[in-house]
Amino acid sequence: MSLPWNKTLHINVGTHAVHGMLRPAWARHKVLARSSHFIDPSDMGHDDKPALAAIDAVLSELKANAPGRGARLRVVLADAHIHFDVVSGDYRDLSERQLQSIATACVAELLGDKAPDQVVRCWLQPDLHHLLICSIGTREIESMVEVASRHGLSLASIQPDFCIQWNQLAEKMTDGTSVFASTNGNRAMIACVLRGTVTALSAGLCINDEYNIQTNPPTKHSLDARVDRLLASQGLNFSSISSFILVAPDISERGLDPRWTIFPPNQETS
Image (cartoon, rainbow, N blue to C red; front, top):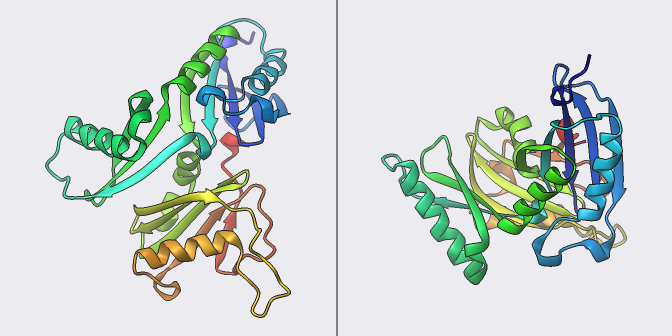
């Protein structure tokens, strides 16, 4: 007998498509069913809501393999849906409430009039001097709650893709200064990492529109160009970086600097 709450539906809401899988709770790496649907551009970005038509289609197909109500839903959102920031200071003696107040104030400064419609979360990092902040629109969360309810699912979690990929590889960046990057669709999240602590972030498009092998010297891949700008802004150069780690499910390696060690994405989101 397979009870409905013994199964979990995982969906990854990307920038161009929604991917989903059905897994049994007792075997994390076993996949019972998969489904993917491209996102109709006309369904993107309305009132900060995810691409609901594609999400509905994926969940409907997965639910056909998990009849009944009560299965859990875990959602990973592309970083394009999330606002990230990192701020430095001496946070050693601050309470969680004080840290949350700092994070909320930073989001208010960053987003202005849009800030009241954000859910803000923060993490004090290992050095106790850098606060990592992320925020997501309340309407996006409400949309996911509604879609879970509509399909008879229990919404177990909503996570940014960057956090999922970071958790997979963070242990590789505990020594020296590293660069960590993850891509989702045509966007990248890039972090400077000092002994396991994210000290600076950059986010944006990583379409390789700058790369041209015909020039002498060839222009850099747009991901490498963004990384170099971030390093320069921190007073860092190539020789001071112990490792360059990239999680890239769909980026072409053509034109990338050979400094990168490339990993596939965490299977929870594939």
